[in-house]
Image (cartoon, rainbow, N blue to C red; front, side, top):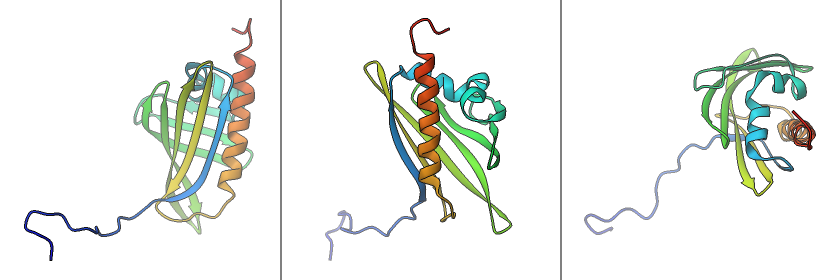
Length: 152
């Protein structure tokens, strides 16, 4: 029996969000440039999708059209140039499941380490890690081309 005032040695298990996708990459560009590529509509349209809507404030819309379909989300955290998180609805068997996508940017001298995690309160079928790895490769190609000397 624990002593009075002591804490039990085990806690009840807390629910964990399912990790749908997880990907990392290092980009040869400063964090502010990578963050701008994630939050400025004209830059998003250049590397990610069409019909981009990005309102870079908490509660703002984060939307684009990809070949796989329309992504519509709401920004839930933004702290440039380090953090961007948004919700994303995914239809599963006729029901929309709310998922969250979190970008974390970490400056590494002239480079930026980018980590993206896609989570949900339940499993959602799909090749999410492969999708996000592809997204990061596109972001890298764009940000590095924009980081070249003489780029606007």
